[in-house]
Image (tube, rainbow, N blue to C red; front, side):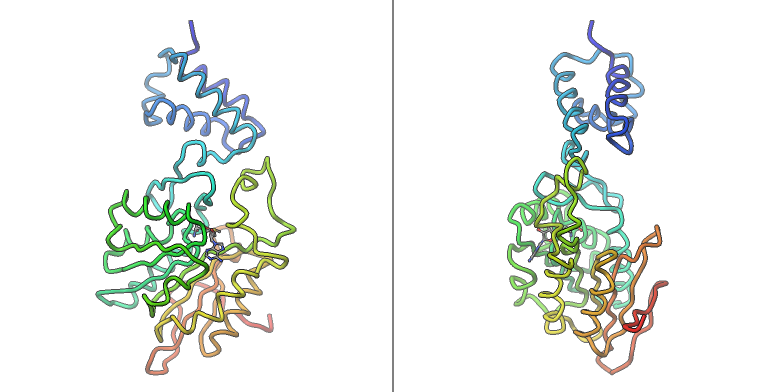
Length: 305
Ligand SMILES: C[S@@+](CC[C@H](N)C(=O)[O-])C[C@H]1O[C@@H](n2cnc3c(N)ncnc32)[C@H](O)[C@@H]1O
């Protein structure tokens, strides 16, 4: 007789020990994917015998996970801000840290108190940021751009699956250029590649299986942002906000770029829950010339720091 569901999960969990941060969870997620059942169902039916075909499929997926492939690529799904996003190999897996950028974007949208808020997301990937903003705030219209055709297709698919395709426009192209005629924007967000080439992850690190186009920020990590940031004042409405994700060692240079592009603006660096500098926030002056105060706790950026 073949293995039961719980036996197969236990063996897989053992196989993944030392190769995954969460071996049991990964084994359960893969089983859940193969059987198309939620995890609580697996626990309630642990004694059931795993049919041969499903067992073979499960074993193959566990081996690929043991090689380092991200779990999200194997189950073609990742959670972000309380929703499930379709994910596929060739497009970055959305990260929990990026939820900080979303939180701040939502606070800025609320501050505007407008009935129609225009948002631009440059380098949208799976659409995690763009689609979440559209889902969370019905008064927004979001334009999402990406150089990768696969990413643009995935953003469209996620927007459709989560019921916001009428308010999310996904366009293929370099940086923001495809969106020029749709501006100006009230809020511009970007999580562009910022890893210095020399620090790029390699397999079996799961991030080593993600596309280089999504991670490689060139020699100092700033090559992509360096082309985008000086362009932003032309497409941001006065009083608007820019939020850019990065991490050390790149983020200080990014804040510097932002301050040079928006000389009048207040530039802050927001840390994530782990205390790591994560988002550069640019608060531009209101059209009446008033400067803006912060909506959340953050460090004002100082070029002398
Ligand atoms: C770090 S990933 C972020 C994806 C998504 N925004 C997220 O937070 O999960 C960077 C994204 O920028 C895209 N990208 C890289 N260079 C670009 C460029 N020059 N113009 C537009 N998009 C670019 C990549 O294809 C990738 O989808």
